[in-house]
Amino acid sequence: METAYRAIPIADNIYWVGVVDWALRNFHGYTTHRGSTYNAYLIVADKVVLIDTVKKPFKDEMLSRIASVIEPTKIDYIISNHAEMDHSGALPEVIEIVKPEKVFASTMGVKNLKGQLHIDTEIIAVKDGEELDIGGKRLRFFETRMLHWPDSMFTYVVENKVLFSQDAFGMHYATISIFADECPRAVVEHELITYYANILLPYSKLVENLLNRLEREGLEVRVIAPDHGPIFRRPEDVKWVLDMYKRMSKQKPTNRAVVVYDTMWGSTDKMARAIADGLASEGTEVALLPISGCHRSDVATEALKSGALLVGSPTINNNMFPSVADVLTYLKGLRPQNLIGAAFGSYGWSGEAVKQVEEILKSMGVEVVDTLRVQWVPDEEKLKECFNLGVRVAQRLKEISS
Figure (cartoon, rainbow, N blue to C red):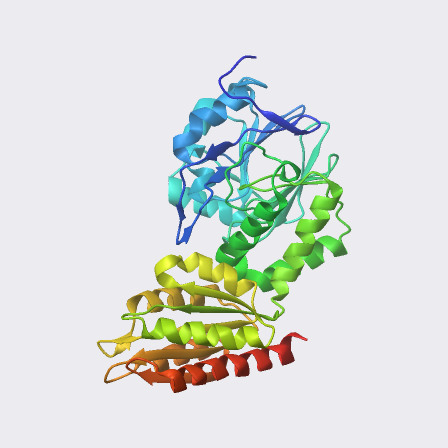
């Protein structure tokens, strides 16, 4: 039927009915430079099933896409793979409009949906490994707790081998082309890494366990349909994204360093530039990130791609610079692994910042190779010390990344 928005087929009688949020630029702490999508999916079998909903303001657009296939009131079941508000915000109103026979979620999903949305409708808890026959298609459920909420789960269509993976394998990337093979690969790769670094990094061991389980069970996946970003529908793309997750979850150090810093009057900036030159002189790839020109989430992305994290701060009021504290607090929560690093900075008369940075790096499990404080403005001799610090870090990085 004619509607303002159209559903897009992704497999036999399975449709994308999500929305594109072109304006989103912040997602609980990280900058979404390219917006996002909130993906919902419609399965038409003997029972009509809606997989997830969307952020509340986009409810009508989702319903319009559904209506291009079938009257929304003909939806029999709603499955919530993830209770976060960008996927469940529209759920109460959709339930009221659709009046489904049943609503399903994981055990923790039932608890979270009730707690967040105060839904009166009964929500049925499904168990890990349980299957639901919808007439012509079977849905299998996989609990994926803490990937990245306690309620998270996957839904797998056995006959079509489509995996609805909620936030796993997703990215914040607003695009008209909802399939990964129709998007620039470099953009898809960057946004996939960015999403993993800022959302899933703390749960990397759980990601490893999940991937091992899928392999152990011999689960064949032809389509990966996440709740954010494009859909992976070609065999080579499905393999690529699974391989990317394997690599990212292991966090094996690379011969790459990120130098992040802020500066008050330019002295710490001079130090950072000299350190970067020292790193590069040993063949290490360097990302130089002045905090004034980047966001904390950009630092997290670069850190995931690197083997070394070097942090510089001037001292203000006997403390590190507030912007540096912000970045380190954010990174500490993401719990990156297998990094080496260094702390550096300039100061006027007290100089506590470098020690504070060093302590936070060590509390994160970073192997601190060296530290360097410079009083006032670094002269040529001090800049040589900075260069040599970069060399030492690069040499240690070669040892652990070879």
